[in-house]
Amino acid sequence: SYHLYYGDAEGRPGTILTFFTWPGARQGRDGNGQLTATAFAIPKGSAGYWRERLAANGVAAEQPGERFGERVLPFSDPDGLRLELIETAHTDPANAWTASEVPGDAAISGFHGGTLSEKAHEPTVALLTDTMGLQLVGSEGNRLRYETNGTGAGRTIDIVSAPQNQHGRVAVGTVHHIAWRTETDEQQREWLEALNRQGYSVSPVMDRVYFHSIYYREPGGVLFEIATDQPGFAVDEPIDQLGKSLKLPSWFESHRAEIEASLPEISVLRKAAVK
Image 1: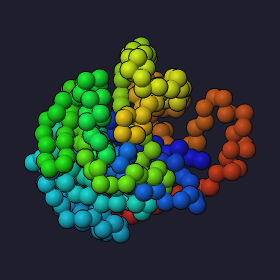
Image 2: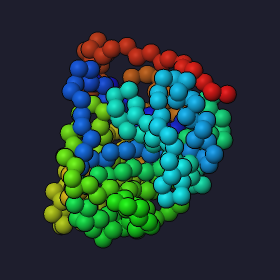
Image 3: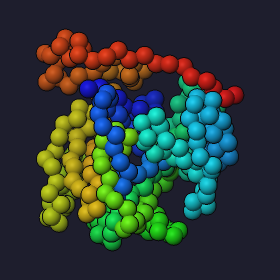
Image 4: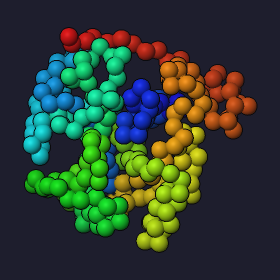
C-alpha cells in the first residue's frame, strides 16, 4: 500500500497528515477511544472562502460555528473522515503552500489540533497534564481544551466526554493514531522510559526513515505516537523533489520492481478554484 504524506513544502513537523490506500476495506465508525476530528489552522476571516472552495469541488461543508472564540468550519472527506478548518490568530504563514492557487490570506498553515472522544475523560486528562505537560485552557459544555507549551498553531487538543457513545472502530474514514513531536532520539528514549515506568507498555523505537517512532495507547484507547523531528523528509531526496517519485526504505529496495508492479498508478487532478 502507498503511504501518502501531505504537508507543507518541506514536510515540517506540525503539518503532516498521512493516508494509506486500502481499496475495498470496510468503513470505520467514529466513537469513543478515537481522534474524531482533525483540525487545520486558517487565517481569520477565511472560512467563507473555504466554504465556497469546498462547494466548488463537491464537498458540502456544514454551517460555520464558534468554539472557544474561534470560527470553525466542519466537513467530511469522501471517505467520511471528519475534518475542520479553524480561524485562528496563531497561523504561521511560513508553513503555507506558496505554489497553490489558494491566496495567502486564506492558506492553511498546519494543524490547529484534534478532538479526542472519551467514555471517561479523567484518566486521559491525567496523562495529558501530569505526564505530557499540557495545560487546561478552557471548557465549553462537555468539551475540554488543552494546549502544549510554546507558540503557534498545532498545539491544541480537545477532549469530548461522551459516556453515552459507543466505542469507535478504526477502518476507512477514521484516524489510526495521532503523533506528538519530540526533537531528538535522546528525548524520545526519555519519554519511552518514563511512560513504561507508568505502565503504558510503549513499543520499541521504530525506524520510519524520516523519523523514529514509539507508540502507546492512552487510557481511553487512542493510539499515541511520539516521533522525532529528525532526520526529516529530505533524508532521501531534495526538498524540491518531495512527492515526485516512489521512495522506499533501504531494506525494501531489493523488492522495488515487485512493489512497483503491485501498486496502482496515481494521477493528480486539478479541481475547481475560488478566486
